[in-house]
Image (tube, rainbow, N blue to C red; front, side, top):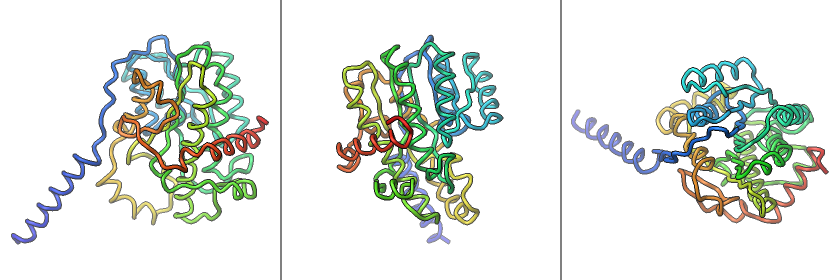
Length: 318
């Protein structure tokens, strides 16, 4: 019995040490207020996006929840208004798996909104299937949809300035690769639809986010718009809600023990959106509210440019 208690005590102590040194997420300490500012957040009806929207609404921003599911988004709008007392929170329909929907969102936004100060490309998924245009769903939503949205809104971002674009990536980008032959041939990042293949597809898409940010920063030089990519942390979200039951059974205990709440997951997004003085770090990757170094493949100028030009063609911009 004493041996069992000692083992349990050691495991608990090890877990607490891990939580304090590795898992715990620092808080964004910015006191910036956003009255008169407008923010667009994709995928903001739940998870990290909703937590981010809630925080920015508390700061007085006009917050637009750009989401596909109207019912869930309107419920989120109601929750945020009730908790913050800010009535400048609204839903606008956006389906990132349909590039025409992205164009329609941009058209409606530009007709009705006079300014855009912060664009947070937060939505992400890990599912099988194809987008309306036939792209792999993970590639189409996590990268192409956000790429097109950003470019369509870029002039409005430049008009108001200083403005920011935040691309929510992941440390999964470390496992990612960009297979341009596969993209050209299959319109997806890699073939296969096993659980492992989908996870690696997700990692590839997160590398796309980092490379997109890297190239975007170059193209924004001389403007009053800056951009940042980030890892939100290991967070309990609904990103895997469509995974099969066996995959969920494997992940559930890991998620319970080692993943953090969505408020923690929003902190680095908030830091990149709000922190004063980080403009010289445009194009860089952040984690735990601090800039981080990335591998050579995540800042490869040639790959970033090639991905940009390929994305332009696939989105009908070139």
